[in-house]
Amino acid sequence: MTEQHILLIEDEAPIRQMIRLTLEQAQYRISEAADASAGYQQALTLKPDLILLDWMLPDMSGPELLRRLRDDPQAHRIPVIMLTARGEEQDVIRGLDAGADDYLAKPVSLKLLRARIKAQLRRIERYTDHSADSNHRLITHCMTLDLHAQEVIVNQQRFALGSSEFKVLQFVIRHPGRIFSRAQLLDSIWGQNSFIEERTVDVHVMRLRKQLKQYGLEQCIQTVRGRGYRFSEQACKDSVT
Image (cartoon, rainbow, N blue to C red):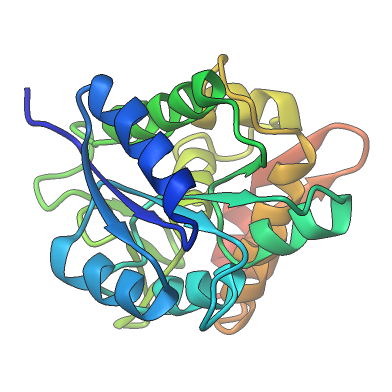
């Protein structure tokens, strides 16, 4: 099995050393960066399997760096777990809204960190698709999902989604018309052993709709009051008529 590669972007050397030793014992390959600029360049050149990103960095905040990564086609697919001493609800939402896939408060439990990393990497493996067409695409009336590039194609225009938003869209498109609760989406997309809270689903759906809105497709992801979310084929058809 190929050794999985993690990029740790953290300015405090003792924390980097502690995390590095723990993850190397778990058979991960670790690269380190002490600031956002170095971390950004390493993310683009090394293309790690996962990034651990500190919120407070000397040259740029973690959320700001994360937004840059999500906007870059070379790095937007890499899952990111944020590490931060800021544990208030609004900070958690801000981190998720910037594109984080998960969030851990400091002081970090190393056992929990390993579990979160394993869950994120397992989710990526689980969503390596083998059931789409020969071009690895999912096709609807209004859009096509390129599963290899993790991009959405609308009217021959391509745009990228964050990793979590893409997984949500991919999942509901595979089950058109079916209503999924937040808990069901968490279990189906992130796994039953996920530590992610249900409100995270709302954040990802909100971000997904915001990007689809640019193409008039936000109504394809519908909220069913008191029950959850669904992909509407009819709304998809209506958007192209």
